[in-house]
Length: 130
Image 1 (spheres, rainbow, N blue to C red):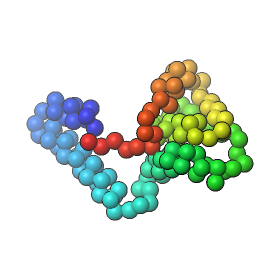
Image 2 (cartoon, rainbow, N blue to C red; image 1 turned 180 degrees about the horizontal axis):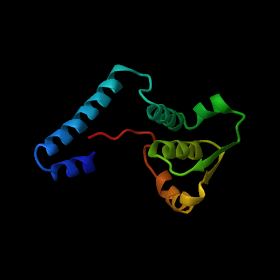
Image 3 (cartoon, helix red, strand yellow; image 1 turned 45 degrees about the vertical axis):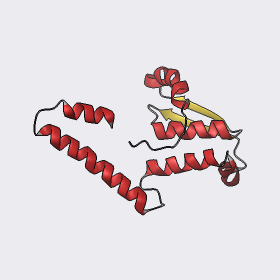
């Protein structure tokens, strides 16, 4: 959000105002949807809710749903978004499940190097607004 606002402020008129308005409209829509429903408003929000549930229940939510699962394997990733990295973080931090991630050859080395930083977050599953 900060990067968008910074970039928009450096644009020429009236593009700067239009760009800022697009961001504010999206943020207001997101806030409105969050206040109007308890259901996930997107697939990503569903992953965030699951992450928060795992974290707040200290893994009990996973045990209740998947008590027989001992290993989670994720194959063929060429990237991993913050919500999914947070989900993996919560599984690793709150359950005894072994997590194995297999990246694609082209991006695997880079992502392998980045994974520790992606998993080192406080408040996994949180949504950041000002």
